[in-house]
Image (cartoon, helix red, strand yellow):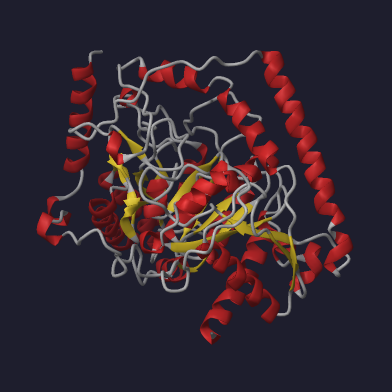
Length: 534
């Protein structure tokens, strides 16, 4: 296809997307607020618990709730550009079926009865573009396993959300749908690659931080489960066939209890290891009575900005106040782990992207910076192939990753000598990134999340507070660890980041989803109590 052809395909796709929104839900330019902080906008007004209770009791119908969420989602979309597919007729028809079931049988169809859920664009339901022009007219032959599972539980998938071209970015922009912005401040990034979910709420994916970065930047809870815990079959992806460090699906929400509800509902139907209430009650962690957390102040490579350090200090004081203990976590091999992950992905990534983009002639997006867009808002990038590596070379990288995982496990086990509980550290508390949500095009450091993908550790994002230019003043220069650390220090300006959410990760070991949600609740409760009293 010629350059003109792929631009025309984009225009047609955008027109169809706009036409799928009922006209009475559209905002005029005069009704759109300015780019400053959008504190007054709430994506949802009720918690998942309240929604499910009222839906099960037939106080609210699934059609009413789905319609209300559609209106909120389409307004949010006009503010932050978070949606890709909007299928009102399908979702409302399914909502009516759910209502009819309750009316006929006198009981909910399942634990997620009538709950609207958004899906990252790559989760097969109707279409999956991954931000590629080449896939505009490609439609899924069947829904993904997760969609089928969610619908069997009573949920109503109702929209799909924006992603960056290829998915392999920590921000969200593609030539088809454009850029998704942060709902707290549209001058800042929503993160990526689940950036549309960060600006809305629902199910995302994570191969190097793609759930946790949007959750952290947008002030949400987000869970990166271990590989295989949530069904991935039927979802489309870049780097398909690469399974050394696999992408996983997981939830994002504005409440931790919603994360719990999602995992508890989906687990029994999809994995041999069903949800364990005993593990959630922290049976393997002293019953949760006196936990020991390891605080990782930095990863030994890049020192975080002042707001992140303040967030860590808040969590430390909150946990101590709640009667738990805290030790400093000494990171080992983080740079080696991250570099190993990148070598695995880079083994054939550019050939993968080129194979798809050459169908339409669309360039591979080369930057997330707004300044790189042409007058029509397209990123023309550069089309090129990576050199790749041989099968033998990739085997050596995979062997190195296994060695590093074993060393990290040994390191964790040895912390039993310093915790005072007789157990190793129960969970690690660390940054999501060395900064809060930065301006568009400037989220270039993903190693605070990628390291846990390389280890296949469970990681949960918990929002703490917001950046404050009066409290988070720029500190004098420290002894820089490297040039990237120095650049990160220089990038901090309190005014730029003021009001952005501060969120942290609670990290456990492989398949510790229940325990990490339980310990996440301990952290969340302690922080809320501490902040309310201070």
